[in-house]
Length: 191
Ligand SMILES: [Fe+2]
Ligand SMILES: [Fe+2]
Image (cartoon, rainbow, N blue to C red; front, side):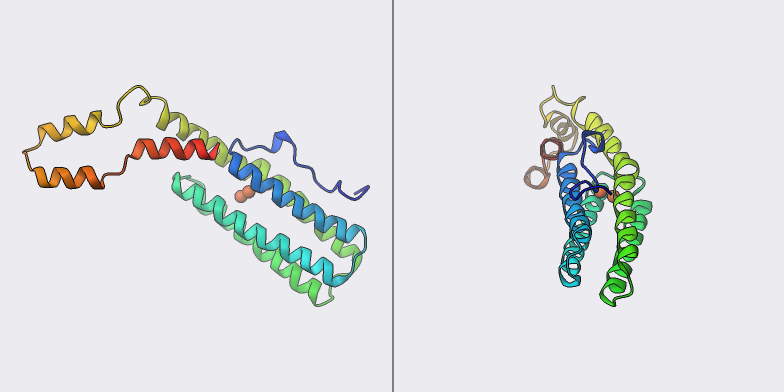
């Protein structure tokens, strides 16, 4: 444990290569360290409880965003990842209930907080890192091979081979999303 502010530290080796998720992990670690400091400083039950809930709320937000991202990119480990997240949320909720009921003495709080920190680090290094690898592979597949082609080239050829039905062509042109462009822009936003 040592001194305050040294519970866990974000470092480049924790980067999963997705800037948006890395930013959230930094915030998660910051909130965790605030909790560590509060416990380390022996601050009151009310304040520790507040910080604990602040961390728990952000955890839920982060997990939701991370799961949405996995869903969007058809990550094959999504269901397993969701279970791991849900298990953690449930353990943290139990911890908060016990803390609020006064069932955790100082030693136990310190031990529990230590365990939460270790869980966060391990989870980022293992399960979250795997999402980063998946997204990088997808990004390489989705953006590189088509960069030189006009986005509409394949569609135009396909339409020429079809019987002429101008109204349906117009509909499809209006409604068809510029899929490749969107995916490319989304990746630019993510990384
Ligand atoms: Fe995760
Ligand atoms: Fe995460």
